[in-house]
Amino acid sequence: MKKKKIILIIGFIALVFLSRLVIKNVKNSKLSKTCLIDSFNKKFNDLDNAKLNSVFNFNESINCIDWNKILIVEAPYVHRSLIYLTSDVLIPDYDYSNINEGTYLLFFLDGNSPISKPIEFGGSDFIFSNNFNRFNYVKIDRDEAKFIYKKYEHSDFELYTLELLKRDSLIE
Image 1 (cartoon, rainbow, N blue to C red):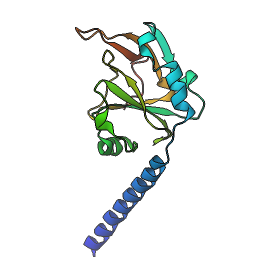
Image 2 (image 1 turned 45 degrees about the vertical axis):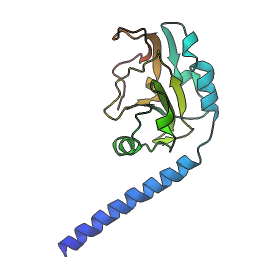
Image 3 (image 1 turned 90 degrees about the vertical axis):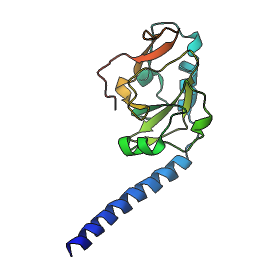
């Protein structure tokens, strides 16, 4: 009798987990290009022409749709299932393997759900150096999404980075 209850509880938990996964996949399949992508590209995607030590405040600059977090992943090293298990964010299915190394993908989130297609940024002389966790992503609250464009100091190469202004932010 006790074994049967345990099996029922485990089955119920698995059913809830799978139903959440299906719902998130359906939502992700309906993602489209939004004004967030255009707003980001106008302000931030041309980092080659950015002035050193200029501040980029996503919170103030990108506000055409409500969002409360950003998730940045390092392409092509994207582990969708591990990101989902550790952050409860299911990023959309995308051809991550054909993205050049040195490219990063930015997802705007509402809660833990992406609200637009991923935005590619970065390049061969750019490194995003903000404490990626072991699954190559970082999740940052909207209020903490303030960066400074500066020379990356921990390399023999001439690299540039967007560094969080407040280092004790809510990085996951």
